Image 1 (cartoon, rainbow, N blue to C red):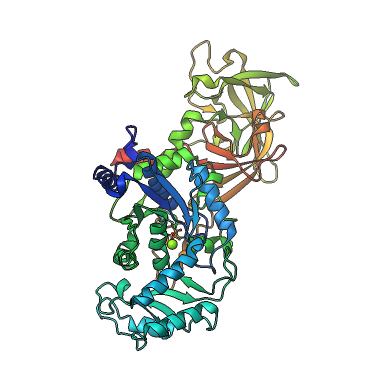
Image 2 (image 1 turned 30 degrees about the vertical axis):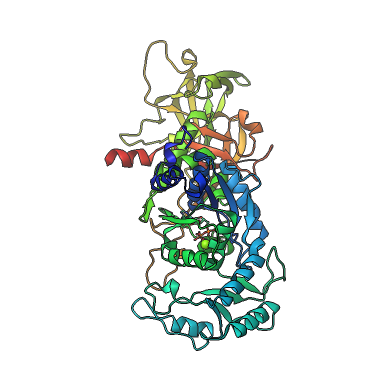
Length: 564
Ligand code: ATP
Ligand code: MG
């Protein structure tokens, strides 16, 4: 184990691996893999698995393969393969030349199947899918043997070959392992190994019309690649005896050790590709990388950084029992990361015009603004101040309640990096009564934000110059689901019942300071007082600024922790 092994991987799995290395199991070699099925985009749950598998390889001088478990031609696509590779790389991991596809092993799997048939450990069954289900029994009832179970080796070999040659339609035969229909573990009741499926595979085309089941592909792929520790989520715990059975019966030289851990669940979102694909297909969100989705590409577009996601995966740790993590923790990790390095700027989301009556018309001056108080090296920039400004509509109240300390008629406040201003008039639309403009005065002595006479103000507002600021579109996001657990639905209801209709708010008339004119796609800023905002990686360009609010400044996680 490398000395600098991170605390992150010092968990129960790391302990197992460390003990194996110490005992010189597998000659001290460590090899893991991340095995996505290319049937959707990766999500934050996958990030946990990626960090774990690549992290172990890193800590133990091992290798982590990227392997696509592409055994289901009807659900899989090249687009998903490309996105998965992009996401893993973006997270900061590198599989070098170790990228594999289960479909590369189809010929081998076929040979393995023939080997088991010859050994009398596999047979062709001709029951229908419904009958197979019925014969399987239940948790309380043992299964029943198929009348085809005792076919001769010759007949099985002949039928299996003809299955491969395409002589039979879908669903007419399957190849099953001959294990034990009375087993207490349903997975061991003669599980299906191969099915007939006349479908075009995205990589093997029409070469095959029989496809191996997950259980007959996954462990064999692991073994072929020389994986030492095959780490998966808890739902595969009951499959482990089968995983081991295939490897033992196939007499494979490499027997990887399957280890399970609890999958990540997050509040207010869902983490299943099957459900995510529906949100995209049915138009609840705009795309797989919609910033409201927990997909890695969605989080990226929202403004999450690889570092914040890896930090999050570190902090949640590994468990043997399922639990749900509060979304607030993920947001906390992002704030921690961005606070240190996001440049501060000023932007006004809902502009209210302010005319500074005693400021000369046509005059402009540049005020010094600090780029990042957390990072002295970040320096400062100039922001233009002029007679006409915008402040946030929310920062003014004509008739303020007791605890409202921001601008109000007759009241003085500070403009950040600027001057003290006092509101002396409110101009309204005669017809609607809507506030259109504030008339203010400024105190020239307060340049930079302090008054020589030491008088205090209770609020500091962000602002921009009306003429010098730039127009921007800002997209605000809240939880995609109104319920903490969206899958807990009433009978007859679907998880989509809890989609939050207000999860996206688009503000088209925002104003931002001119230093953002060249904002590069994916650059992240703190808009003072408002939160962190990321220039949209597709839509933001020169002349059309588009920002996503990544996260607000208020840290609900810090509050939750304090309470606890
Ligand atoms: P989904 O239900 O979202 O489709 P999956 O498990 O079917 O997930 P795979 O593509 O098979 O998706 O997963 C690749 C790897 O990522 C597997 O090893 C799986 O155990 C792991 N993984 C998937 N979801 C999570 C999660 N929520 N937390 C941790 N690991 C996960
Ligand atoms: Mg899966």
